[in-house]
Structure formats: C-alpha cells, structure tokens
Image 1 (spheres, rainbow, N blue to C red):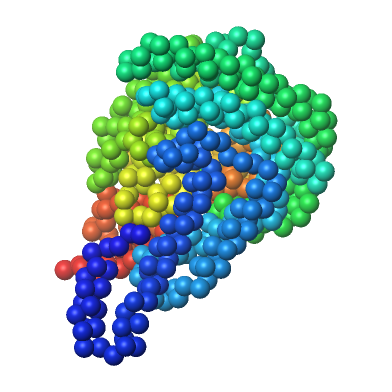
Image 2 (cartoon, rainbow, N blue to C red):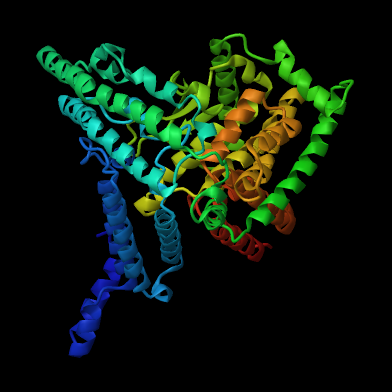
Length: 597
C-alpha cells in the first residue's frame, strides 16, 4: 500500500492523542480512511488488469507475466465482467466527499473507465476481437519489438509465448464463432484482402517468419551453446505452434467468417446497434452528446475549414475551383516522394526541426526519446498513413512513429508536416511519454487514455506548427487544412455510416469532395470507421474543446497568458475526460486572475 508522508504524519499525531483517548477514539483511529480504501481498490484493479492481459503488463514494464498470453474465451470475458462489477460495488462504498480533490478525480476516472468496459461487455464487443487493421493476428508478429530480449530467460519467455500462440489463435476462432451465432460480425466489405495480412506468417521455413528475427542476432552475454539451444526451441515453436495457429485462423477466415460477414456497414445493424452506437459516441467524446449533435458540428466545421482552404487556393493563384485544385494535387508527380527513403528523410527533417522549437511551447519535455519506423509490409496496404507506438513503461524501448511507405502515390509530401507533428512531437509522443512519466498519478492513469483527449491533443498539436514557423509553403498549409478537414469529415461520416444510414460509397464520396486525401487513403479511412464505430469522433471533439479553453484563457488573462503554462495545465493531469480538462483550465484561469497585481 502506498502511504504518503502526510498520512504518516497524521497517523503519528493520532497515536499521540490516543495515549489519553477513550476506547472509541482508539477504534476510530484504526479505521481505514476513504483515501486508503480507494488506494487499495485501485491497486487491486491494476493488479487484476496486469494478470488478465500479460501483453499489456509487458508494455507497462511489469515483467512477471512475460511468458504468458491473455485468455480470450467467452468464460474469461464473463469472469472479467463480474470482477469489474465487484470493483464498482467497492467504489460505491467509498464516501467520495471524504476524498481530496485529486483523489476525487481518480475516483471519477476509475468509475468512468470501468463503466465503459462493463458496457462494452454488455454489448458483446468481445465477440468481435479484430478489425480490418488490428487484432492478435496483426500485433503478434511484432512481439519481438514489444518485449525485452536481453537474457536467456527473456528468450525463454519469448519462446513460451510462441508456443502459446496455437491455443491463443484457437481461442480467437472460438470466440468469433460465438460472434457469428449472435450476429456480432464485421461487415464483409472491410474484410476484403484480410487473408493477405495472415499469409506472410504461414511459412515452411522458420527463418522466413518475422518472429524468427531475435534468433538471428543474440546479445553477446548469451553463450553460444545457449544460443544454439534457444534457436532450436524457437524454430520448433514457430513450426509447431505459430504457423499452425496462423494457418487455422486463415482457414477459418476464408471458409467461415468472411462467408458469414454482414452486408451492412453501420453499427446500427448489430444487435442493440443504435444503443451501442450512442454509447460509443459518449465513450469516445467523453461528453453527453447525441449522434445528431456530433453530425451537425461536423457539417459546421467542414464549412468553416472549406472557406480557409479556398483562401489558400487563391493565394497560390490556381486557375480553377476546389475540385480542380484537389485533382491537381492528387495527380501532380511533384507532390509525391519518389522513394520510401525520400519519404522517411522528409519526415526526419520535419521532426528534427520541431524538436528545436519545443522549448518555446513547453516547460517540461519527456525523458523518453522517439524514433521512426516503416509500417510493416504485411499490414501496410490495409492500414492508415501512420501511427504511433508508446515507449515501454520501464524505459527499455523508445516511442516509435510508424510511417506507411506503401503506394507512394498516396503519400503526398505536403501532408508530412501536419502528420508528423500529430504522431510524434508535439503530438502523441510528447503527450503520452510525459503521461507515463507522471509518478504522482496512479498506475492506471499513467497508461490509460481517453481518446478525445489523446487524439484531440494531437490534432491541436498540428496547428501549433503555425506558431513556430511551420507551414510556410502554402501547399503544406493546405495539407494541414486538409488534415483538419479530414477530422471534421469524420464527425459527419462516422455518424452518417453508423446512425443515419449512409452507404460506404456515400461516405467515400463525401470525403473525396471535401478533402485532398488520396482515394487510396480515403477508402482505407472509411473502412477503418466502419470497423471501429465512434473512435473517429474523438479527434475533432477533443481539439475543439482544447482550442475553446485556450481562447477563454487568452481572453480572460490577456497579457498574463503564457502558452507554456497553459500547455502544462492541459498536459499536467494526464489523459482525462474533457469535463475534467475544462475544470482544470478554469481553475488555472481563476488562480491566475486572483494573482493579478
């Protein structure tokens, strides 16, 4: 149990008073405080989550379970649900009014996260454990990049996980069969090409597997005879567990799952679909909003950003309308990299330039570094333009910004500044690495994230480039606006698809008419929204809230407004619901106003 100095001092004082106190006072002094009860609950819940998801435990730097994989049966999902319900009952037994302000925030955030998880179970989302761009079959081949491999014991853990994969794959197959029976299946359209993400892992030679890489370059500390033994064990595990597991999953997808996938694209077609999507809207925005309200906000933002884009077209003296300009951008060879190496170099230059500007915007920077990597070939055709992977919780691995180098004609150079500022700094890496380093937060808050905050911050970070010299090229500024438009369109398209009856073709057309994204990217994005209902709403919702709070702070504080201090307030509490962020910023404004001379 964690006990603060303040608590220790209080206990000592109680001991002194108790020398002359009545027996009833002695009993009261020994009773557990509301703060201690909450801390015990948070500790128990954190330990439970680590044990239930050993891969997550490895990520956060807890290595007790490095030889295990999660259990993903229906019975396990039900057992987890029951335990989380018990946690909620324990939470309700704590007198929230007896907690400090900081403890009440922990209470409220734990309540919200647990409630969301329970609701997800009740909507049976565990029966759809994959999407068109994520799932165990996508993440497992990257296992070597996500766990320590420094000692022979580390390799034994790695091999144990390889040996466990066969059962892991079978459990997913069984769960997805339950999904077929209950109508909880993905739309057929997003499963086109799904087998192509599995096929590269069905090999006849273990050395051809991505999972074989650790056996080709051992740390020097591991003796040669141990290397030989471990390599033999690794080869057996790949051939006898990994390859058969992927083969059975591939057969299941081709022969059963894809054949029974639904023809509809919207979440409303699922059992309890409309209620499920309303829940998703509130989960991902953290606000009490209806799908109709979100849709209307999207339409308004699209109109506003469109007007700004027209100003850029006028600035470059283009002879044509918006559609003609977008066609010019999509077809002009000068706007695209000629090689993957050129694309990676351009990304590197942008990020190194931003690294030098960060102290102008922030008082505190993360200790963890970040790097850039190419998106793996086996998922590149079906995934997004880029994504970010957080650092390991124990500091053993940096954060990584993954850049998609597949189909270079869909990776315009004028988007690189906005994309890189979003995914790395001052976007995801800066915010998430800082959060992981906040030792004053309970563990569950250091590693948890509210998408509206995390993605809202990253979208806000794109605009910060304007304040430190980026987007000097009008085309790069158009790329920034196109990215902002992309997120505004998501509010319209996601709600359209899942609640208002839009077709996939209607969503693609709307994106094509309003953004400069390549048609390849638009199609990949729309399919992402189809398979991940509600998540896309978080970006613009969060960014709009942060920008509104900043405008309020600037207007109220005037010359006393300090951008570095404002960012410290926004980021200083970690990822929080937008209502908590609003409280934090308003408290900062009030305190600064009261300190005015």
